[in-house]
Length: 373
Image 1 (cartoon, rainbow, N blue to C red):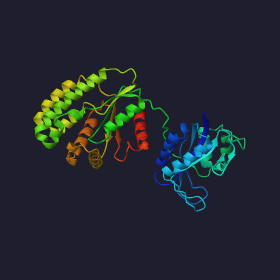
Image 2 (tube, helix red, strand yellow):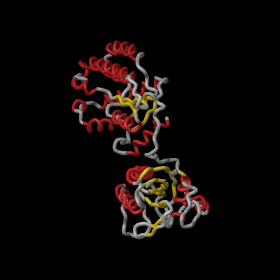
Image 3 (tube, helix red, strand yellow):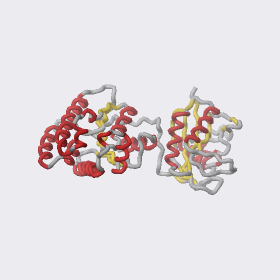
Image 4 (tube, rainbow, N blue to C red):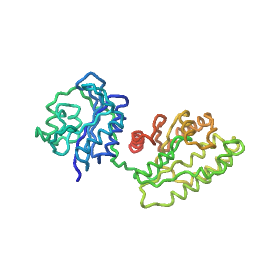
């Protein structure tokens, strides 16, 4: 049977917002369904002289008992870097997670006291709790959260402009028919397109670059194989996009691809000689008129240093000799194309300092940027 619980989270070390978001992710995975998340409040340290805190509250429905919840929370705190000291008194902490209410339970054990015995004295708990459950009645004081909050002095708390993402909130990408994820070599196009398709019920189109016999040869001898490489890519992209966009999938909400056909033009301008590019451009313009355009074009920008690390990490032999100058030219080509094509609905996201594959917080940030655009 599902029970409703209210949890307070706080952090005053390092990237505080990221620590709170990671806590939300873990609580969602291990405790239950996150129903509501309050705004973040910046608050002075309480009970000792320390760094300012970020605090927030969550409403969660769970099948766990209070004792089971507390055991999971202690494990989550350790996982997220909480180190409990034997020293008495309050201390700085990377993450702090407290159960405030569990239904209307009144409980006192060595492990857990419910309701939380100090919550009603703490503005940094009662204010965010008031944002998500103002009518919740405190089972001991028989007053609402709103009433208890009004009785407290301000205590110097301030609402932050930063927010937390609810992993259980379904983002709606169905208003887009076709999203193209673009970027330089190693920017993470395929990873992001795949995750978005899986998480939001999209039809996925991935570029078939691995089947191109000219690609390894091009990296060995650019001059000789540039034109056949670019022509083969253009033909394959044209055919794939035309075929896949024409085939409706009634069970998918939208289409997302890890490339747009226009990348052919960008790469060709970098790799081809002037006369070759003139001929290529004529053929491209003829084909491009026939192809549906994405109604959202997302460009993942990464600096060259990070691109080189990504390329090395994924370990494709034929890519290991790509010079940084080549990547610089490709980045410049994309940005110049975006600048000069005002008709494109473009969202540029700098992912140089993000790891959206390993870090759920980074992924949610990108998803929110796309969804809110």
